[in-house]
Image (cartoon, rainbow over all chains, first blue to last red; front, side, top):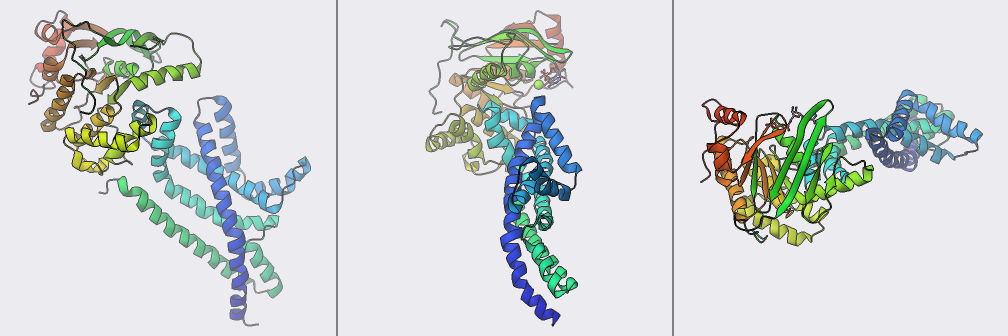
Length: 221
Length: 278
Ligand SMILES: Nc1ncnc2c1ncn2[C@@H]1O[C@H](COP(=O)(O)OP(=O)(O)OP(=O)(O)O)[C@@H](O)[C@H]1O
Ligand SMILES: [Mg+2]
């Protein structure tokens, strides 16, 4: 069989794997991960030990263990505790927790980078801590956290390939399936790599657009 | 100004107390910065705090609006339950106390502290709309009037980084006024400004004083204090060394420390007093 013909024929299944697997898995895990990250970051900054100690512990465990092991604990380990999750929920659970742990530190650093005077100004126009955080601090923290969070996002696109190992039908599992019966490993895996790359290129472009939009209130030298 | 000016208290009229602070004591760890300061702020009056660097002026101002709650002392606001900082309270009760203080006053900072991600107009209406829940259209109309009054109506859509220091400080003043607070606090509002615009900002503050706003001002501008203040307090090492009318305090200080401080400030090479506002 002609390798070009094979490459052409497998493009459809690979793109379907991206559209129905990789991309929704990335979006769901990232959205959930951001919510978790904000909660973990806020807990981590709380003066109450009952909040910041568990947050620190969680961050430390997530950053100190391989994502693949986390996925396996969730998918193969939890059933022995009577918690049985399907591949998709398992993957979203593990990936969003992982993103949450990493991004929590990014968000915390971004919040801390906003000058104390902004908290004080919010306070003196009558805002509570929570309202100042939401209206004044987070919008400014968002700007500084776009570049690092974009890295997290792009990293996540690639990390979703690990979900193939817990039986999620996504781009890389599709590639493995095609490679296994065609035995054209080089062609198929290069093609899969190219699809990942294109997705990440698109994201980098979107990041640039977002950054310049958020930079409109900053003086440019 | 859209707010009805309050009548300036004259010497003969009974003086209504807006805020009274007693025994304010603030420490940072081992360091006690305020050793039991008393302060009465009367409606329509301008109280000026002077004193050397590190004497506790900023800390006192921040006690009055709850930014830095003192460890001890009582602050009474007219019409409110007096707030006793020495009392043992739950976190929630403390927060409620701070909320009462922060709602009573507006603050103008030395470094402006404008919201950099909001335009001038957004900076000004944020408090009225988001906190005080006033209709946006009303708040914006009032904000435009206030901006016009201080001569920066053309800048309402600018971001703070596009403004000069003097323009930013005017926005800072308007942002505080827009809340219609009972009390305006100023912490060295002209100390970050170029000398040639200091007078403009002081002139705006003098207008506010003439209109009857109640103000507490920390400043090194002695000429301003002399002309505008109803009462001057000299703070040193966290105690009020001397207080009185500007005439008393500036022309015939009783305490040697006050005299030494004023001499240092007026001597060439000290921080020069600005020319009186036009
Ligand atoms: N958050 C803080 N933590 C520790 N020490 C502080 C804090 N804020 C103020 N201090 C100390 O309290 C003392 C009084 O400070 P404060 O800012 O009130 O002085 P000030 O009279 O406003 O001085 P300046 O004229 O320089 O502004 C100083 O010794 C200062 O170092
Ligand atoms: Mg100060």
